[in-house]
Image (tube, rainbow, N blue to C red; front, side, top):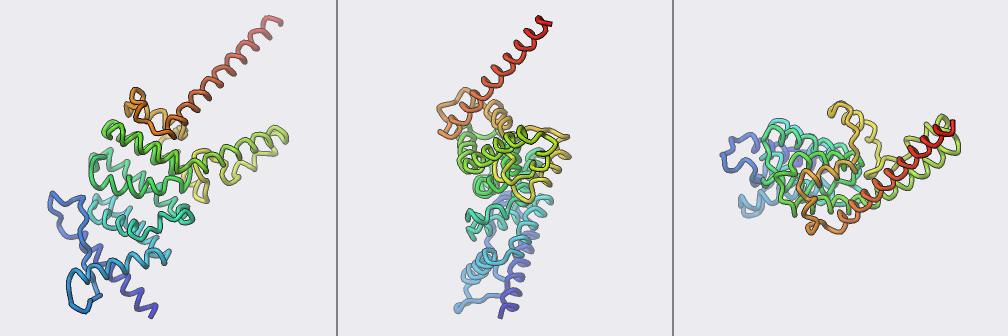
Length: 305
């Protein structure tokens, strides 16, 4: 029975991919195409019934089978790499309909996919194959990536880089909403990361940097969101892709606000963005004051000598 079910699932998935190979008309490149069931028949033989039952089979098994989730995620990225937004959108809709990615416990599982999805969308934006005002963007970013932004701190950063690519083309209210949502979604992870970073700094001070060096990999140490088993790999990829750029999420939020024209539209800022930008400004002032104090101390030492 289980084998039969698996065969049915893979048959449905193959038909879904085959539908994506059909020549799309210019007006439906980013529209969802209804799935036509491969093997299931309802009592009436209705095409609508077949489509609904085939789709529900995929949706249900996606939630239950990790291997199917991995395959679907890989297929999404493959379709994007080939510019097939139609099939990619259908697969993303499958993920959304299952509601699996909305489970807090399941979000970390999506870290590699979410990071790669944000990176792939950047490439499509830069080559003008994707607009931030398209319906596909609404599904891929507005529904999928925003739901997964807390999967890993590096996912958070990669989504910010994606927004930086399009922030001039996104309505200010929408852009501010994106920022507010991400800050709200990552609040607990950022607080935990900040706390562990302070503990790490305290241990470093007490033991000396040489002895504490091995503690750098403490889970949650990376500011910006949750850390995961994928974090080291993400940092390596980011270093290769961006030439060693070390922009963290704080600097990226500043850039999104400035480049996106939000600096003069603070009335659009949600409470989370207002609080965060205020914290960044206070931190900047504290750093400036500490730097000036160090410079003054150095001058006084020089005069005494």
